[in-house]
Length: 127
Image (cartoon, rainbow, N blue to C red; front, side):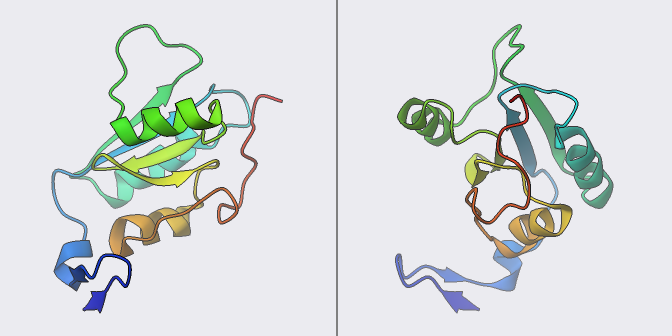
């Protein structure tokens, strides 16, 4: 059990454990040759078979894209510098770069939130 000093919320291991029905969305400004979204999505689908894992290529939008208000707000504030981003159950958990496989597990299982400085990849795949 831990207590978040900012909110005084109590978190138990059960709160953070992987659970069925989770949704993991990966948002990319564009999917190009150096994008890691496909590999990360495949890893997450294998590790969490009961989760829904989706990739959204915002450079090739052909219909509606489910996007939480918090990510839409960050895109408006940063002119999409917050992309790529990872969203877990509607909450932005990584922005500016996709997490490594190990970081993604920490995000899903431990509730870790990452910014671009924490992610070990380039935030701009399209040059």
